[in-house]
Length: 260
Figure 1: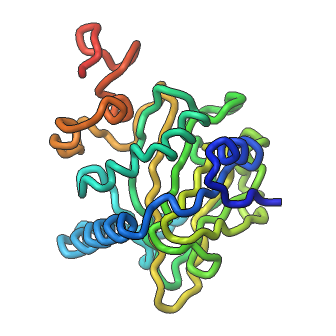
Figure 2: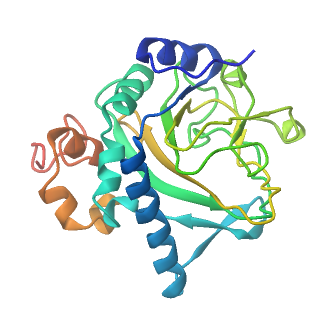
């Protein structure tokens, strides 16, 4: 059984605990969704035009149909709004607690014919045996409709309860496509097994934005101190400063004090 899409935050948090993920529909109103989609595809186009397009690595080969867009926080202010979306943050706090760190926010655009990613869990950087609770949460923003046919993220429901990464012989474990309309979010805790699906369409791209949050003891995937547009920090809210690691307690101090 799979959880039904829900707008109820308490039910969504319960679904994450039970199934390893939840689906929340209609988080982005139409006008906001259009703005996010335009900003993302514009950033992807700019990367291609400047010769800095990054392809998606699938196991040991590159998939030429698939594009990654990194460091979205520096590309357009609208992506900061996704990071701090109240419902998304509520589910992050329910899953990993607070304070938390924003490890990364990037996009995956899979094109026609795009292949599947290798099955994995997001907290593979954590030595096994894993702690009893998830160490991170991934908030996937559906910028286009996520369908089985266009390569929606595939997940192995309940695999988080195994509390380990998949073994090599489990790479073909049965998975289901997380189908959701554009504007929805899929929140996955960091132990659940998942992968990018195979885009079997002839002419459709499928874009997803992935905001990755962790407990505050882990190094961030994106080095915000080097890569972030300074304007983002200068105008950041208190919560954003915490997420970026500029406001901290115990770790990351400067002369014994929080740097912000």
